[in-house]
Image 1: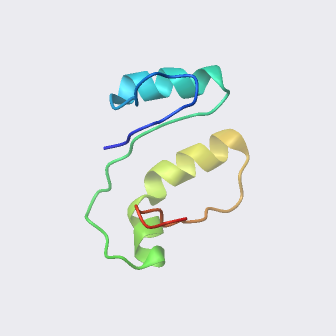
Image 2: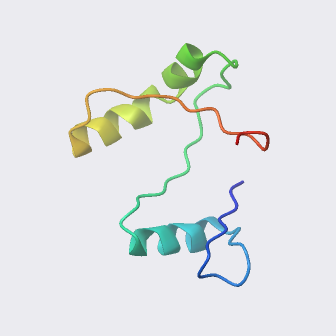
Amino acid sequence: MATLTSPDQHSPLTKAADIQQHLQLLGIQYQQWQPQKTPSELPEEILAAYQPQLTILMEASGYITADLIDIHPHTP
């Protein structure tokens, strides 16, 4: 589940379609993916679990690498 809080919104967006529409207006692509199997917390295993979706995105957009950023409520 994602929550998007934006200065130009009066309340946070929580529905995926609303978040996608808002970000699209800013030129940001938003997708939600489900892994084929639940990965461990190791970055390599997380990237491997999402590899099919990453490959499609990378080929379509010309990206050559993928990185993982761990964001949680305690991230500054």
